Image (cartoon, rainbow, N blue to C red; front, top):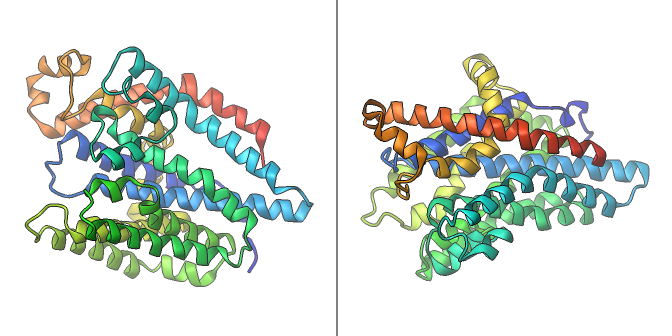
Length: 366
């Protein structure tokens, strides 16, 4: 198998996909789960699959260049971590600093968990959420994945990598089953990195075969029948889980993420190869692509702008909503209103902080 020259190009529809994923999270969080359908879980899972794909593709490309030029892998790994640091750290730590200075609970009391990207571990150990900042657990999972995965890609045979990625999937499901059978609270297997690896593993498998220009993969992924089957399986597992008297049961704890990941795999895969028709127009819409590009900031800021369960009366957005009862009492208008504010904040963040700092990545090209 040979690498396609298009494998390293910008894939426009993935930004449109980020827009859809972050929108699902925002709608679910701001509505207080009134939809009765776990779309925020799906949105986060879609980000995990997407990260698995993009990171694996980047690492495989870098590894191939090392092998062609005789370069050392340790230099490529160093550049990977520098580039990830440039992209991720600035607004994350700026947000933590602001929360610390404003004494937003529980940041000061748990500051080291925030500084070390380990809030997911705190949630798993204490089996409790962290108020307005509890969504940062998923960023901790991503960062922990980045810490070990590059070494796997660079220092094992490329022929073995698919087996390792399949191992991620089986390990993740097995660990979730283990936790469930041992009576562990549902949030523990939900937030730990090892129990999220099926999503990253599927994204990684997609990247591996895409990078090596597998025609068989392309035929399977772009066959919309499989996309529809994965969607129906996901919907079916959600409905099945709701038949149990307890909200968090073996279906929702152990198998839901597996089927979220499966649907995300086909959806991301179709975006990678390029949707056609109406879906193409949606994913390549200029506004949606832009929102997808700034989605990292949108995700970080959205719960501080408005939190359905942990709003402070001093929150200026809450005060503004109190003066606009027509918007405050209409959930659709409220979500649109909050989304516009969040986009405005993320836009300032993008042009003032993120984009200028991101330009430094050009000094550390692979």
